Image 1 (spheres, rainbow, N blue to C red):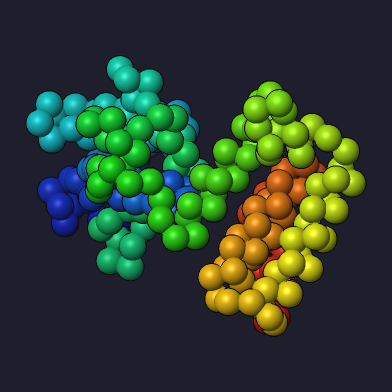
Image 2 (image 1 turned 90 degrees about the horizontal axis):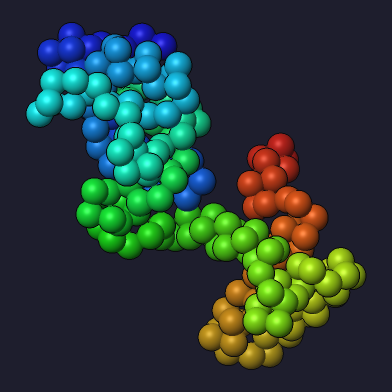
Length: 197
């Protein structure tokens, strides 16, 4: 990977994106040493323009960014770093420096997937999801079948709002079944990408 550090006086803008939700988290700057430190440690390290030194994100707050991968843009003067955040990224306590909302659109499904995964340890008396995950696999599978039938019926004989509601139930129960099988939507995306659609 060739990076043109000279164009920006030794620094390149570095966009940080959540590897799971695809949400843009922040913008920082790296020099060659910060990039090397990031690769060596596995945690995103920037060059601080105000302090004139390297700093690893989260070194004092604990809100680190675990490196997943790095790409350089077409002009070789900007980096895209995909990472997994541990806690909020912004110093104001929000997930992203670009607004306080969490991931939007399809990225929200990754957040829901994490929530479902965390329900594996929850009390089944207080969480429907935990009850499904801690019950027999046949119950999870049965719920997907039931919701599938209800979605078909809603598509053919009910309003668009009822159809959307049933489709949401189907997707939720499918995600619970995936979690029960120790799989995720990412596994299904991988399978879909191998197909000629």
